[in-house]
Amino acid sequence: MAPHLLSFSARARQEQEALKVALANGDGASLKSISERLVHRQGPGALQLLMRKIASNAEALAFWQQQLLPVQQIAAECYEEVKEVKEVVESCPPEPIAEKKIEVARRLRGWLPSWNGPLRQAS
Image (cartoon, rainbow, N blue to C red; front, side):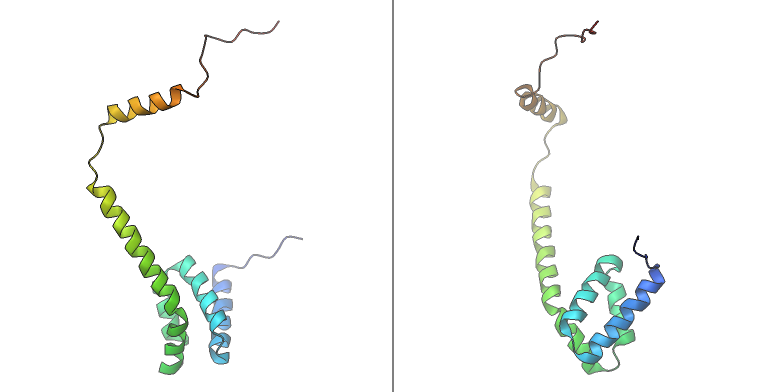
């Protein structure tokens, strides 16, 4: 039997309830995993709105943010690495297209089979 797929709104309600329960129970691992899935699908802005909506007081909001702190640090580090790589790539002078085509042809020549004309039909 095929699993029943939830609609977007049903999944959102289910996740909100799970977040409320995890926050009430002080379950940091559940808060973190559900929050990560939410950010993956809807982006960090959606999570921030949901955190303000669900967290009943400043203590609950601070606890939730504390659980997400390692994830935010990793994301910031990855962003910085991507930014550095982008700067290096942008600083490299572009190669002319003709030289790239010649280099690709040179590399392919060694391992592509040679073509000796049309294939003969077997009779």
